[in-house]
Image (tube, rainbow, N blue to C red):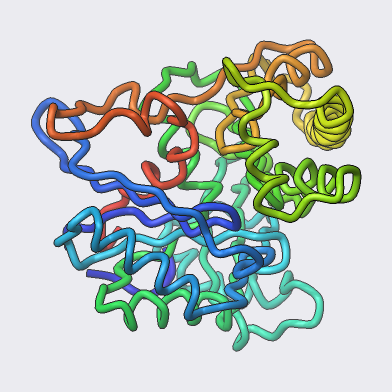
Length: 355
């Protein structure tokens, strides 16, 4: 999507809470999983998509890839974050993609995010829809701060790898969904990836993205912070308590359970409000049918049940490996325990250089 390209590659999802990678190969029968791994992101080293502590993040990635014996040198990386990646929908006269590429810089300059110049961003576009009756087409303009993209690229290169594609995480999630699930051209679904410090919403109809947004609200981190404040715990102990809540054989105090449930309810309430607001902007003929969720936060305690109850819609946790062949050499423990955590990484791994 942005300007760094090359050949075979693995997908690397550098998140606030964890760093994930997935390597796929494409066969005549579809995709096959070649390698997979996850490691905790050093605390407070990434904020709203921006790398704050480069040495710590670099060492975490280096250790993970060394442990998993990754030999592929080319990497597809994803970026996101409300302050780092911005999107604007516009309508332009119907034209070919080549013609649009020649005119898009002028169009982009009219819609730059406040406070930024065209020289401070990388810009790309996605054609969302063609409207023959209006003689126009709907286009999503994507802006990413050069400073942010260059920091990720420099990090990967310093590790001795080559960043061949820089993609937008929301579109990587969409690619993963399209690979694993069948949805009709008339069906509208919401893809919701809920992480530690933000969540990502992409509402799609068939192959078209109708609404995409990174929402900078604490999610999993909010539960950790409430446990720290309420029980006087340090970050690591509060985080462990949060992750173990609801697991078989794990007991916690009534006060801790109350804190976790209240914090989870508050997160769900915010997500439902944002989701309903987004759904209210959709065309009247949108047949909204289902919410697909991914990320680490939905794995916590009663999160999914609370979301189902609050939204009163069908909710399903994404399995990004549903249509991917998994050979016996792969340790499937990670896939069985937390499949949806790898949704973005799978979508990144599907990207082909030079696209």
